[in-house]
Image 1 (tube, rainbow, N blue to C red):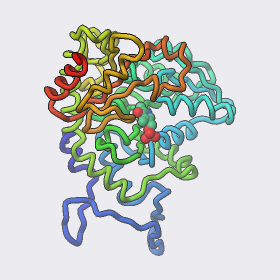
Image 2 (cartoon, helix red, strand yellow; image 1 turned 90 degrees about the horizontal axis):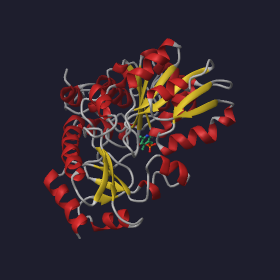
Image 3 (cartoon, rainbow, N blue to C red; image 1 turned 180 degrees about the vertical axis):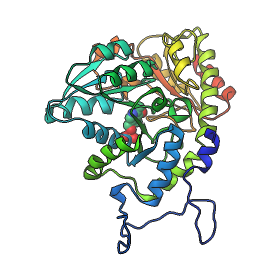
Length: 376
Ligand SMILES: *Cc1c(COP(=O)(O)O)cnc(C)c1O
């Protein structure tokens, strides 16, 4: 099946009583067990609503299995704790989601896990591997500079050495990138973003082979962090339009990035779909579409970015991303507030860099909004 069809049909459960097209919401946390081999329980990640949404996502990411979590960070923490123990070493890309960076920095040392942060570049990540390295964690494209890492190169170098690899695929979504097909072992999503797409829930996902899903499960069911039936259903409903939404968002983003890069008030635009992007060739090889996230720098003194945002009438200054509504934020006072200034500036994240999450509005209206804010 093609992705549009998978979005609508994969995993759905037809209610035998009414033959309604939608998966019923199975609300129970207590299930009968006599004469049954299955012990259903929400924290065991095995209820019908959890299974329905996992089937859809696994079909989209082309993996055998997966687990649904109550947040993206629940997924990240379960995966890292499943594959690492005292004495192990992990290579973690330095440009990763702030919450992931903070988790690795604050909690790995408490468990005696060594880690090295490596630049968002395949050769640098490979060079950081040591004999005791057990796990590699990457993210591509990155937040907010949209750096693209050669995923297949990292995956094959890790496989040669028997190292497990994981990627945060949130920014690309399963519509634009399938890292499992590029050799990555474990694919993670903050479902709060594109998978949900309507900015009305918090959830996460892990997609992998049956064997590795079982390994994550054996840690995850002790940690908790499963998703309740009502939220699973809301996610399943959202996923029916994932392909439509992301395709439109991606097309809008390409048009906006091209328009912005010609403007005199804009210093630079970071979008992997632009031929001028330093990793454009890698992006073309490994992505089906270039995604709907970009960042750009407004020219002017340090307050120029925030005053530009305040002039916008349609694009909404907000945290989070991936929804049908276009949103914008300045990473310096949001996602990267806690990152030391020197590190931030070395990454190119200065006061006037803005991160734009393009929604499904008409691109002409979005461009008109950006245009009036630049002119006024
Ligand atoms: C938001 C986000 C996360 C964390 O997800 P939550 O659902 O907020 O826990 C992880 N990675 C990326 C890339 C994100 O954007």
